[in-house]
Image (tube, rainbow, N blue to C red; front, side, top):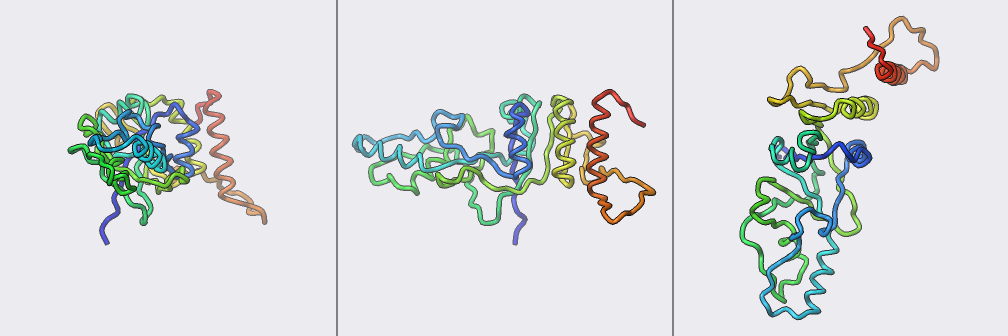
Length: 241
């Protein structure tokens, strides 16, 4: 069995609620085709033989799909600029579930639609095509049925951009240290990944010594409590030791 492929989702830090939903619940939103950023999504060349009622049938068919878009490129400057707030956001490294089909987007000749091609198979072909100017995205997609709003994924790491706002990063690091302590976190510098800040949150533990081990003693709860207190104190201006 070959090594499972990894993919990348570039995200802004502006919509905190959606970013946390993605990371904590490990799922990607599946958009309808009209919600995608390319206005030509699902638009096809028609050969002139398709009657108006069939055009409506095609529109209705396209609306039964939901699309999840992501990249195969983990560090493209245009992707950082266009989808991660000009390097103020992050890129999430992940894998899809073993049984999930992934389509590699084609940037070649646009498919032509004829009356006999108004089928689900043809719709899938159209929905994994994009115009050549989008080729830099190195995009892959998953196509879901209309009732599936999210794609479950397994997140491997989160990398923050070199211009990410420190207060937002600190807040996310605090949340992730409690909810996803084993998640690998990286922070980019102007010249690339800063070696000194390759942090695995699972290694950032706080332990208390000489504690009386009572019957209800919980080391995990103690770690969480100490982490929470440390975060609050630091953001009140306490420097610590």
